[in-house]
Image 1: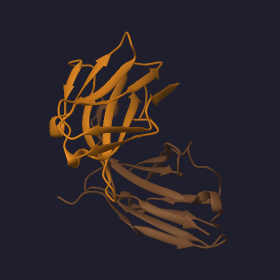
Image 2: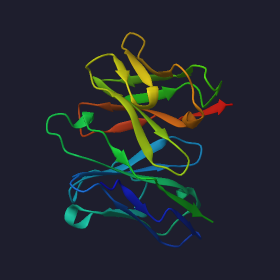
Image 3: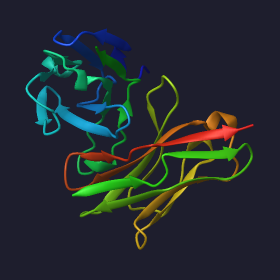
Length: 118
Length: 114
């Protein structure tokens, strides 16, 4: 079974440009998460989808970031316009929905997209 | 509120010697605790997890961790380091009060010296 995949693996853009990151979760996983690691800092939660709905987007840094999950399958994270401080590694994760014990569910992570904004 | 502190940003051990990666947590609720490992250019892989069952948890590749509530710790250990263990390790806390809101530690880079 394929794991979580992310595209692209690396992206280098200039300040002010737009970038779209894509995440394909494991088939059948309703939960999809985005995380970001800025260099030297911890991995931070951005948002959580349950199917196509945003369950929690409290970690989104500002309105330059837009996440979508149309149809409840893959997700995209768009940064427009990109700023220097957006550089980092963006991780996506997915998990099954095991009713009653959501915190026990293992999250499966993708390899991440390394974004560099010049 | 919940938080995780990984006490060492870098740990260096010789091959064949024990590994200890330290993690302390803070959680207002009954926590679930995880250790993930990230090898270069790879995604995060689950090593083991504690979910209020046995306090000593065994994971993959010979790793284990002990949940100590009195010390609010969840240290990761391995009796004998292998070169392939060189990676970055993350301690993660999740609380049962919501939809898997997880908090990551800052990571510990493990170096294994031949």
